[in-house]
Length: 239
Ligand code: NAD
Image 1 (cartoon, helix red, strand yellow):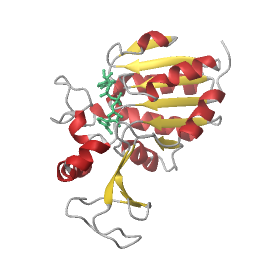
Image 2 (cartoon, helix red, strand yellow; image 1 turned 45 degrees about the vertical axis):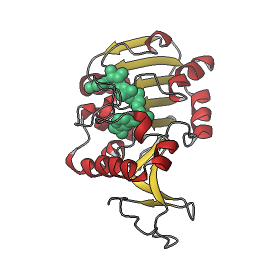
Image 3 (cartoon, protein in one colour; image 1 turned 90 degrees about the vertical axis):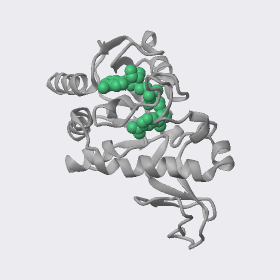
């Protein structure tokens, strides 16, 4: 087996489930009671901006009631201790990886490819601002002062995920690619395992159940993230 120096980790909604944030495709196929087409597309925002702003305002407000769990903390520990290249790519729009890194006293090597709830994007001046309040009610942009142009800084279906070039570069260099708590249903993230394999990386999936993409990985382990992730990090750091 080749030595592991460079690691890329992809996380999805499953890693935050045990912190109390609902996954995307819950048992009812909805996201927090809403159809994805009604809240997570640019067309939905044009059709009914108030519904979309309220939906993300609720998700943003709910962050104050949740904490990072053992899986987020284990990945922050790995980031702190790992001397090779390390990149944590998250599809999550929550801030639990960021908070786990802060708890560890580090600036995490982390990319939010689908944006963040605690960021707002002004469509007038094109600047992003840290945002913890509601966006409903047309607040003014802190950077250009104009009201009515702020949208959630979330990558909706049909939009281009962030930082793709940096992610592709890291995937091409990595020796190990690990996917945690993601259904393998949302592209381009679902294709990262194939990219990593093409460049010769080992691949591991940690997920509650068998996912859409499980058969693409060299190894898969099934169980809750708060159990699987700390155990995997401990064994990697001990090796
Ligand atoms: P998904 O909801 O499609 O899939 C979640 C996966 O996690 C499933 O395969 C499920 O079996 C697994 N899972 C559930 N509980 C788990 C646990 N305790 N431990 C390990 N695995 C567990 O999520 P996705 O693949 O990330 O795609 C959803 C999209 O929705 C993303 O683009 C994301 O931006 C958005 N989203 C984000 C959040 C968040 O920020 N926390 C929450 C919901 C949706």
